[in-house]
Length: 474
Image (cartoon, rainbow, N blue to C red; front, side, top):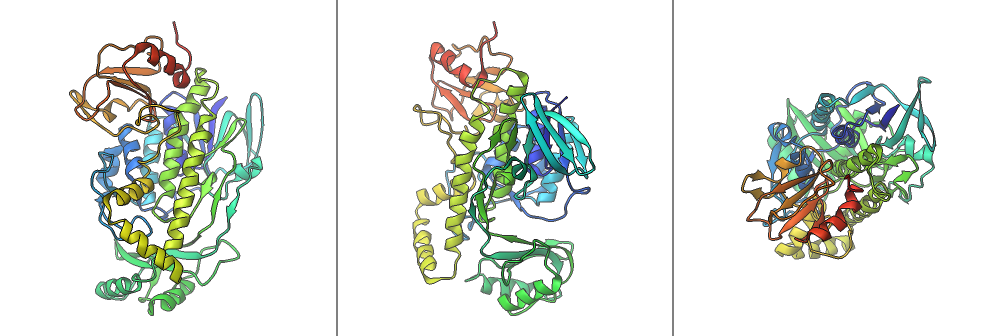
């Protein structure tokens, strides 16, 4: 039997598949589209997703094809310089189009043995105590121990499960596309600079090969979710910017709304949800793709532990307990950003106030760490300030912390040399080393890099290990 079927071959599904394969899990990814999409819905990776790639030894692939930026404007387009002293070794945004991210993750997934079936659409599912049966559009049936829906905001898995998806429907819609413009580059830049003084939902920037990525408010909310025509796009450009720039030869055109919804449950028996299947929100701050990758990073090792048979009783349910509040916070900050880009007098007054507050370094850093997800702290109970936070990459006497995490195992970083993980060595690595950047005697890290324990007492460590790594093996 297949261990896990993943519906959806985008960044969330592919990242989850790669995480599962680290632990020998048999994974099949079902992707509805026969060919990879050219639509660029996301433009890059934030700091926490960059850390995730670094923790798994994938970062160099992304750095080679991406561009590092430290630009302001990631919170509601408020152009405040990038903050100093961020709690990360990767204090930048990595500009990389989503199709490139998809390709890199697909290549890695193939390398580690993930089976990807394109042109396979899930249309039905049923489950019992032994596993999940899925039905495909061609009538084929597959059986697996678990199923994870990662197929976007219109998730068939979520709908078939009957999981409620409460929130707000789309109120405003935006057109997005890549096309050629006959207007001179200096004219495009001048018009964009003027229009964006007030309308932050407008933009036109060169992306190479004579193409521009163009975004413009739509006239209203479309009844059907079909791509706009070039003429509709040009009409909205003229209405917003006073010119259509001679737009022609589009490579692709799309539309997106500001619907904001969060699944009530991330798990129903043997079926789970991740990425946009679990949450949708406006693209402000560029958080959507990153949120999905981080869902996968949280879920992968927990689901693998369940399949391997050593997971503690509550481990798989901790996925919902930890990631649902994170998504709720993202929805709230995108709601706030949506208000702050409104042209109405009230929101504009609040925007001016927030802009003043962001001149304070602590406020600026707090908001950017929220958008980039390095401020996330899971509720693991009372304890040291590091507890529940992911640990930044720190330099050790013998290398870097993240270089030690490529295998997706737990890790005890022991600066005392007096501790032991005997009984858990099949799940937890014990590294005796020191770092000038870490002012604690020892930390126990989960496979996702979040701190599960801090201290120097062996018995206290033994008391905490079973919560995340199951019973000791004699």
